[in-house]
Length: 291
Ligand SMILES: C[S@@+](CC[C@H](N)C(=O)[O-])C[C@H]1O[C@@H](n2cnc3c(N)ncnc32)[C@H](O)[C@@H]1O
Image: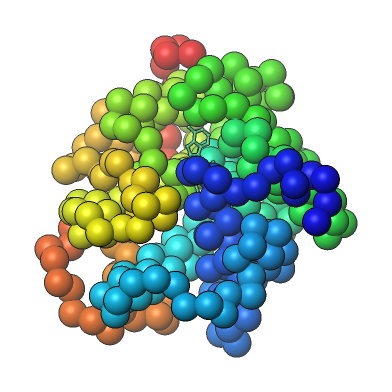
């Protein structure tokens, strides 16, 4: 193990990013993979999650819940890959990945010339990621800029200092992030994203569906991702986003999974409303507040 890995071991909320990488590594091995993430295995290995031979704790119900979470990660990854491609095709050249974790889209996707991709997360996961990227000699396929900041602090200032231009359209991704933030922090985050978004900007969000915390979190293993979930989607995500100046479209996991040829075979056990996967376009100018 290198010095850098000794210093930064996955812990707390950012350890979940390594768990996500493990799921992407497993998907990458499938013949009919919905995406290929060649760096995911290196992240999972460095974080001690690969190879994963020992059975995880829990009964059959816990195993099924974990499989459900893994499928949701695969589907949301494909959903956001497509959204980013559409944004690039529409001419957007700034990408901001909020709570980037081990997201490797800068390395695995094709980007038009002139694309700048900002990865925003706290310092520990970004350091860990850098050590793996160095070892793998990974080369980004666009201009990649990391911004180490806590999203509860003045991240718009840090992003601007790193070169983000709020006068030009941006495509924002918040994948597997909002569920870990309290509701007031989600609200502030969205207001700040909106204030940095020129007309023509786009956004892809994943939201915890209603009731997911009760279903998954109640008997979650302490320290597991589900044990740290704290917020779910609002009752009316389209209205919520419209209030922030976005024209949004909501999709359920089940509907997207079917569209991608991975239908969920179990019948819905709970009322399913749209809203887990959100794409949005900004039509009006950004308000100058909050900064
Ligand atoms: C489940 S991971 C998802 C990572 C990545 N978006 C993906 O889907 O591969 C959640 C990420 O959000 C980041 N995160 C959570 N709270 C944060 C905060 N307050 N500020 C910055 N990053 C945060 C964590 O560090 C972690 O990398």
